[in-house]
Length: 266
Image (cartoon, rainbow, N blue to C red; front, side, top):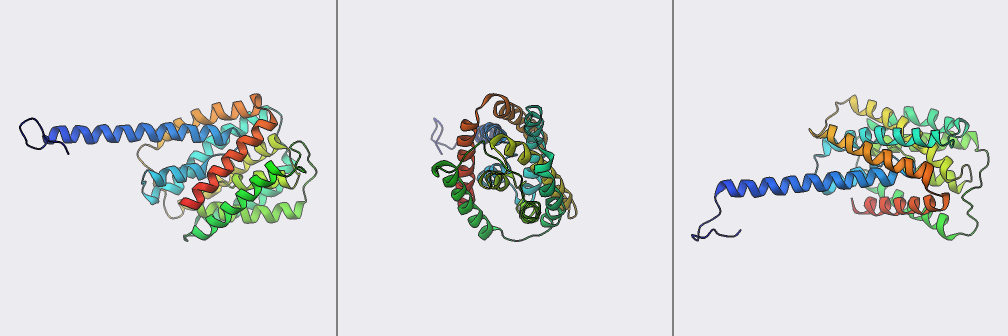
């Protein structure tokens, strides 16, 4: 710390002002990054929970508020993403229904489980990188091809995604989207539309599960929601009406790589 002109320490009032300035600067930086995360994730039909969890960990949030905050932001961002993709005509109930029916009760149960998810996060991170490689580098991948999904396999996937999503505080779309694409059950925009509502429903079920032991929020939660909505509205509109399927595929790859890196680090 620098001394003042008389060789003494800075006055307490100036030290307090500097601390306040640093705190405000960090809050502004957090909000800017939050909007960017909401924009990028919503452009591919995601809520962004993995990004919010990583961001809150970097900014040293109290762990007691992280899961509930991420799930709440998911509700709003995935909700507006679904509305825009639905308006664009990309949503198919037949595609989503078996996943949703199976995943929602499991997300509720998973949210009540308190375990260290480090090993799961590492496995998930590796899976996401494999999905990226499959989408970008294998010539057999066709972004517009789609066929009817297997009902039983959809239910099984829904059960697994719902439980683990609720347990670590995400909506599950970060896993569902590449699965829909790799299994050729949807094209890029159909997968985005289905994942958006899947995330919304799972996040709601997860919050109900968290509520069984009490929900805690940061005092700035309303500000975070507003910022998430701003990023989500712009991102999902761009993804559903402006971006081509090829561009969305690359945006999705960026999202998956970023999420994988965060999962390895946190």
